[in-house]
Image (cartoon, rainbow, N blue to C red):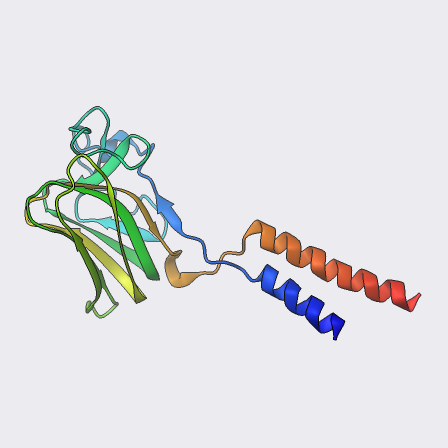
Length: 193
């Protein structure tokens, strides 16, 4: 009975956790800058493509008082299209970001499945001079679109589950699991001798 309890506790502690991938838009090459390169961020990041014309703005090259970064000194926005799509190589079940909006209407975050059906959405109103969190969750999100009718918005610190919903074990969980299994083996060897 004690052995089962110890094994159950060790397994509970060693269960891998799903980690979020975060895009902070810091340190990107100047070719992706709104003022200089105008090149879309595209597939710069692994497992996700940003399009059609997602570019970065860096403090002090823009109205950072009105559209502040959530962290660091860079934000993303559409260059001319009014929207940014995040298209994943796999699927995710959760997506969030920090946004500043000054368009006078609503900023929308919409999640679509592989068949391009809308499966999750969120919206927010004006929040000029601040950065607010917006998120969606649904099983099987293949693409997320951020948009409004004016393109007066910026985003920062986008976070999502790893593409394909891979489970990434935390280092502490791996260490505790190995320690627990090693202890069980050690106790068995000690009792046999």
